[in-house]
Amino acid sequence: MRKKHIPMRTCVGCRSSKPKRDLIRVVRDPQGTVALDLTGKRSGRGVYVCPDEACLEKAVKGRQLERSLQTKVDEGVLTELKKVLHEQDI
Image 1: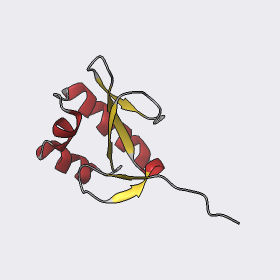
Image 2: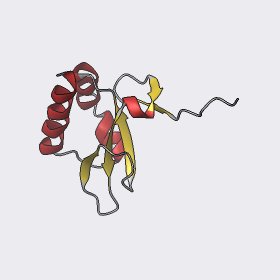
Image 3: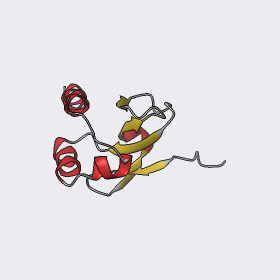
């Protein structure tokens, strides 16, 4: 029997490769707005972050999110991302 293919993605904070389902996707849609993509199916440029607050802080501090998305990331998106991280911890 064949093994099922597991898509791997790289976190922009820690640069480690993990299964796509274990990461949180942030997407810039064709109109240029940045938002969270919890389904992983929205169209646009996407980057992935580990569900770890230290990893998120590293990505924000080093501006990896902005560099990868090629646009400015609003504070509202970052607070929403932190809120999702806290909900997953519970």
